[in-house]
Image (cartoon, rainbow, N blue to C red):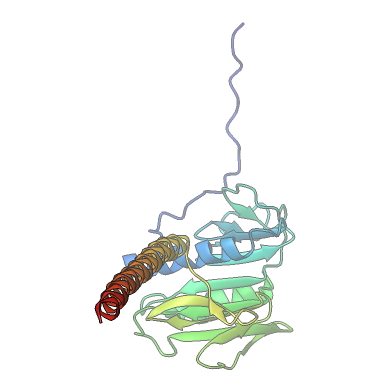
Length: 249
């Protein structure tokens, strides 16, 4: 049976804008780490989707109306594979967006993108971060109030985002998420594996030290018992000699 030739779709929504994922490896790593940490933190919630560097279309029938957030989170969407994000098929309101900025992108991040996120996508919280600190401000967060953004004050050098239940800040020179409930910085998968390996080594060394200490204490007890037995034997010899001396008198 001859296979039917399918017609190509008349309207195409490209999966890429042809631009690289990030300007530098450092920018790329910030995006990867943040998505990794957020996916791990929200892994038990089936309706929280974390994505990034994905073409997002916000007007049906017009592929030119698009944007590509570096990192984003949306509630009410299952953890399924998406090739593009279409707001008429997926939740149209996003909860959080992070743009990893640079001198060549900050004008768009602070103007055009901010306008789209506030008035069209209704992004509840928006963060801009420059890992090289070349723009001013290099780290700033906003919450949506009406159709405009209001800057979120820093607390202990971190920006608290209510929509995440987490705070963003620099930890040891890199952008990380902080859990205020646990009072702890959240780790990447690689860091968690590294920490686990360190804990295994530490536990092994602790067991070795305990075993060595126990062996040393057992040896010391044996030595003490041996000396006590030797002293008792010498005392018995002295007693026997004293008895013989008394018998000859």
